Length: 175
Image (tube, rainbow, N blue to C red):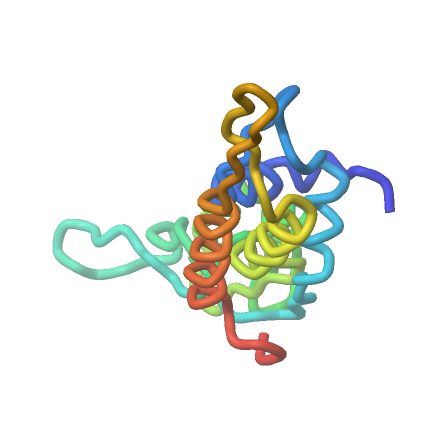
């Protein structure tokens, strides 16, 4: 699958979780990270979003007060669609897909639904770290007079990080 610009924030998030900065010294290119994310993708159809209304003076809510909505989880690919209770497409003015928050152009009373794709960035990062360890289990530290000192410290650090990320991943197969 070719690289998709809609995945840029997710690729950057995975890169940050792994400690693999983009540039000449990177371990994984954009496509490899996107492929790992695609193995952790979840298609979402009409999930009800959580309304976070702006409370007006006096406390009486009106439709105009319902501009903010959020999902139960973040890490959405750009291209999602929000719908009102009649399944009419809603205009979005701002979207923070990594945290799962959207601001509508016009207030709409709940329910508001979303259709799109979200990803488990923790599982994708853990998978890539595991592959990184497998590709380079030993790191050469020094070579003096023909004697090479080898260390597995970086590999162990990556294994530990992968385990920590796996502990944060979403429930397998449940979303």
